Image (cartoon, rainbow, N blue to C red; front, side, top):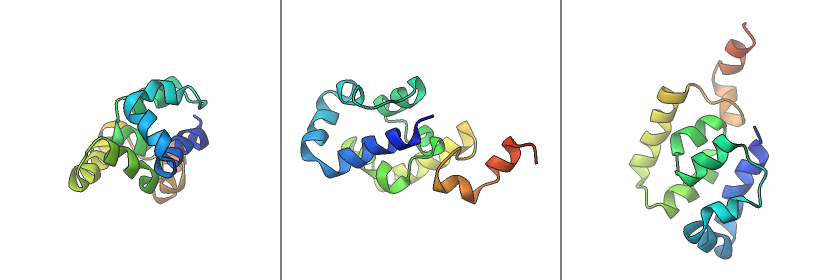
Amino acid sequence: MSLYQLQKVFFDINRDPAVQVRAKEDIEGLLSRYELTDEERDAVVRADIGLLYVLGVNCQLLMCLAALRGIKWADYLQLMRDGVRKHGQVRAGVYAMTTDYHEKAAGL
């Protein structure tokens, strides 16, 4: 997984109006600039908020994708909850520290 690259996508979208336009018009072309796994790329293209959250994307960065796609705040929060239910605990990043995912993965 390339969490840094994945989060960079959303950082760039959040900070650069030209990138915002490209994200709306040609998200796949935009994503070619980043080293992402197939799972990450697909999740961004589909705007799978729940999976992206579970992959470790910081929810403050992830909000820009929700805004681009017109996802309402309450729905955004629910999509993250649904992602955990569907895909399991957050796997990486700062939010993983609030779960026991790494302990379970290590067999502890």
